[in-house]
Length: 456
Image 1: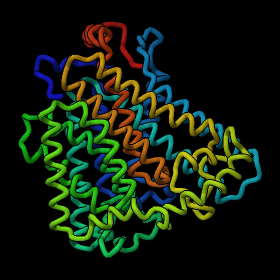
Image 2 (image 1 turned 90 degrees about the horizontal axis):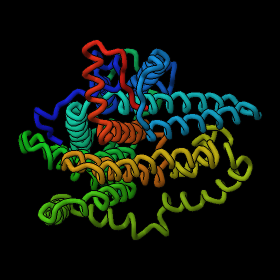
Image 3 (image 1 turned 180 degrees about the vertical axis):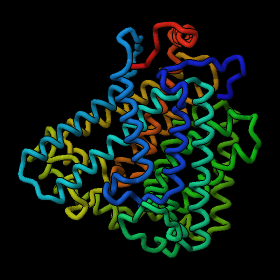
Image 4 (image 1 turned 120 degrees about the horizontal axis):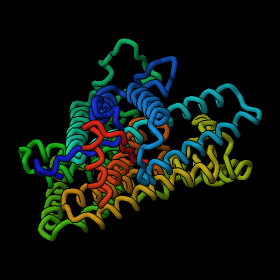
């Protein structure tokens, strides 16, 4: 949003973050998320032991400690996004209790514990973003860092595609071990399918499409940056989406652009149309055959094994849902060896019941509504653009959960909760008249005032 120097006013939300900036923690999280292959984890914690999830768990502990240490005189403002995320955690805890009170084998119980621990890590990053970003200027800084990281994440996928090598199998980090076999580079119809540092090409595709609106926002509004620095992430993602050869990625990209492009000025919309035509032409010329492969993904769904597996799972899922419709059979207890549903919402109804699925949808819907309200009430074009970008990104991520089992893929799940947390931060930092009041209160606090400020 490229704030002017006079607008860079400190809006502190958590007093401990005045010395430990939440943006620093979030930057560490995104570096670990994209730079370290998702298969490498701290072995005692299994799938919950990835470095990025561990940062989230530490963030959650820090936030809880802060909440117990604040003075009763602390002033709170409404924070609906964080509240819905806590309702989601409560629903998962209820489903975990439901799993523990029924006969359960050790494999299901262990996976349920790890899934619940991982969810705490995701929500830890969410609350760190909600409450740890001190002001709009630092929020802006983090969006630039996130866009750049997404660009390098996509660029590694391009290198994998053209080299035909996985490359990440050469990376070894002391203390981390692979929790699953890496295997070779996936292929479809003779085309390489890169995954970058993600677990699967589908995860790679939906992750970069969810981040595309953020990259577009940075490229269009941060004109003080060089042209290459602004547009590098956008270019890398736009090329990487088709070479992921994933229906889910194409759907996610369409959702993101449909949410984003209509809000742009007429000139920007015309340039976007020209860019899409140019990109399609470039893909057609330099990657012959890939357009036909992508077209066949949608035209041949009636005979595609992946699509048939999704539809054939509905009757099986209905049987499990009928056994425990409210809180489910227990989060993480429907193991992949039973059936791969490729629909996280359907899987969540089985695992956490209608309550758990409704809680996750509430998190996404609340975030979307809040971003629409921020855009409506703000007169600053940078803030309006950031709100719409987050709205498009969260919409893309939420649709992604409907086309594959996102909780089984830590990179995408972490990104989706991070985006929700950024929406919570923007909601708090643009609280209208309360923002000016908080700024004044923060100034008095920093000069020795007795009252602190917080966003609840």
